[in-house]
Amino acid sequence: RRPSGRRLRLREMSPRHVQSMLRRMGMQEHAAAFRRDGIDGSMCDLLDEELLHHALGVISQPQRRRFLGWVDRMQLSGEVGARQPTHRGRGSASRPVWNAPRAAGGD
Image (cartoon, rainbow, N blue to C red; front, side, top):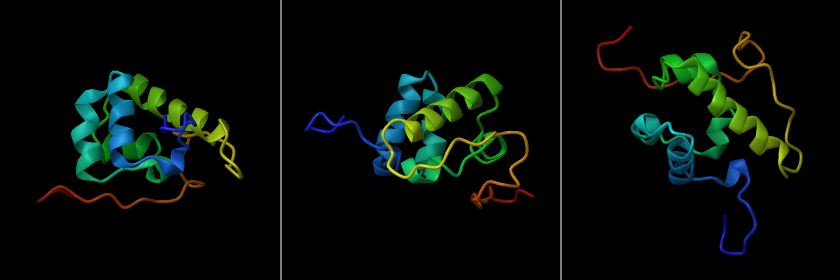
């Protein structure tokens, strides 16, 4: 929450806020990957199951779904003009593409 007591909107969240949420969700082992790639609240909206798994190393499907559920709830809770949640993980053709940095020497 902000000092005024108003809850932060997803797009207002800094990378530190996102990492804090990962810890609250029991996903602290992924905080370093999110920090490395500078994932902030506005970038969370671009993530889908495939990117979480392959680009950020969130191997556990329940963890990916928990994270994406949080993103969807944040979009619905007070975001003015927020788009409706999409069916993530059922193909990302309708989702924006985020080009994650590749690991050194990786294909």
